[in-house]
Length: 410
Image 1 (tube, one colour):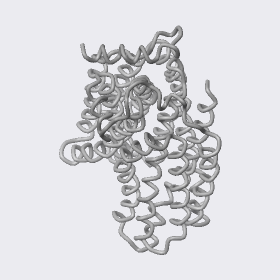
Image 2 (image 1 turned 180 degrees about the horizontal axis):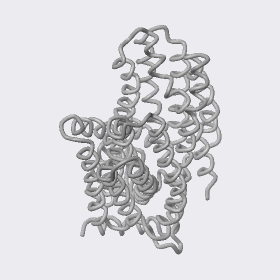
Image 3 (image 1 turned 180 degrees about the vertical axis):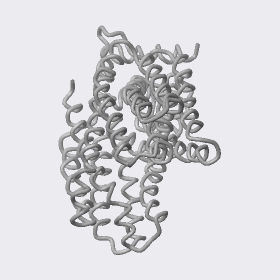
């Protein structure tokens, strides 16, 4: 694979490791300013909200200035804002700085995924996406343990370590990575409107399938799992938070174990079957969580959800990469809108499922999440296959992009 894959995977690991270090510390650090629990939680929310709001502007910056410049700037913004957050003297300063960090995070994530998808030949996009997602996953798992130890010593220390860790990937992004030459030479003029690339993508059944799968994954496998499962363990299973951690570890391990096989399948068998399988398997896991009783039912359901999430980390992203072959000068905007779909699902999932828990039951909440995934699977069934033929895939990409658009019009 191109060297960019290894570099971007290492950067994703470092960024996720730093975020994992600081994430458990944020509510406690906010509370030391004397604010309520809800206000402390809003520090987490403002970061996520600014990521969503900053995604499309970040995409436009990528299209105008190039992936590696925007990536370096985004990581630097997160680093500086984190260090300043560590020395903040008030709650207002903390929340403003975390919001600025969210904007930098949007710049990094959009530019990094765009560069990844345009750097690899079509026949390697699935495996490259798996490695990139694996870097995030392993870093995210490793960070909280380090952060917990640091926070026990000082609530400010995790912010300083987070900012310091990000200096290295910021320098690498600025000095080592380069935009691919194909950026400006992929057939077709630059979009006249910031939304022209999105409008063109929305007319594609392949894009709608990938974005729907990402939204469903954010809604169900990420949002509902993260927000509702801990409450389910406490209220329905009457178990301690230790079992929440065990369940999440089961999901993470099986997710990680699925990434490379899923990448191989996406590159050899096609993006569409991986997307449909990922949505279907994840839906089955959440449905089982709704109907299987007891602790063993909970563990079995999460063991099924893990591989489904792994498939969804790979298939939709690879399909978006195929679509970018025909989106000259608009790749950043298209990737930004794709990521926004996932972020929107992550925001909507906990709120909607929480309402159902309050008014109906946990089973209803998990059933809704399974239904969202099943609907995304149905959208995927009717999408065209975007993977170029395995033989000479890289050489055939421009012509294959035209065939994707022709299939979408049929």
